[in-house]
Length: 374
Image (cartoon, rainbow, N blue to C red; front, side):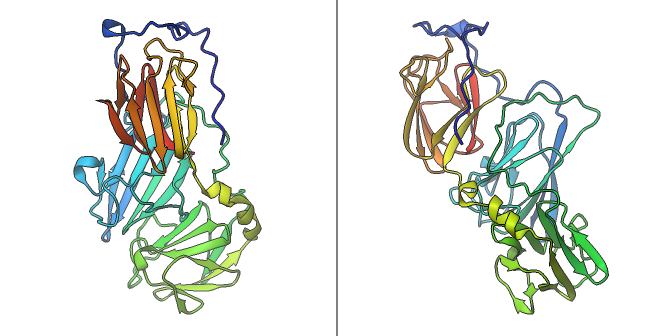
């Protein structure tokens, strides 16, 4: 995806058009407070975490831009006792009217609605099922009718990686005389009360047992944490494609899969290009003066500052002429302060050189950026 066109700052009334040698210092410059917007959030987000057979509920704070999920208490906001994930594995980013979920771990461990991708955008009223390590998370959002809409913190262009199927592209599974039609991007089967298909009082069924989801080949079924599942009488150990009239069994319960013609749609939607995130996006938040921008994730050195010779020009008197450098290296990027007058801040801490990843917040002059994939 190409970077968004930089807005014209020449008419900005707060001094942003000052691109001379002046740099605001001391009393003229105050570090921004990196929090959510001032208006009440119209979107409420909740997280359910399943690990070791128990399910915990976590309410996502409205005033926090990024919530980190990982296996080290000191480094994460949501702690999970799962040695198969990283200290920081999942970043949940609150961008006003949408959320971004990104795999920020040292290794790719997350699947979003079954797909092994690095990032997903969750629209209001939507749900995303995340599997990572031995854990399963259900992230959902809902609109809060009694609150004013939250201001949109950023502009999101039409995203070719938004894996949304047409409304009519659904599949059905039959359990005896009962039919279950997919209503989300993935269907969850298990003993837990909020599963799409709940198997109560059925022996050997786990709270979250199986996940049915869309992939480039059609509809897949995946055992959660090696839960026992039979497809056409054969045991499966990983994601397996379901064809029309295939049967699958969970404990003593048998299901018949009915395909409503989603295979062709899936092939067109889940292309290799749509599944790969090979750029890093720095999205400007709130009233930031600087533009949002995108850089390749490997082998790129980007300079940012007030000078027109920089790769990214920020017309802000609070920025030095060559304020900082960004060096991208896969999932992470290195931020280097180029001896700027007002400094560089990452997650509200002043830095000279630091490695950042998805979910981190970068502050340059009077601009605040959230880092994620593109």
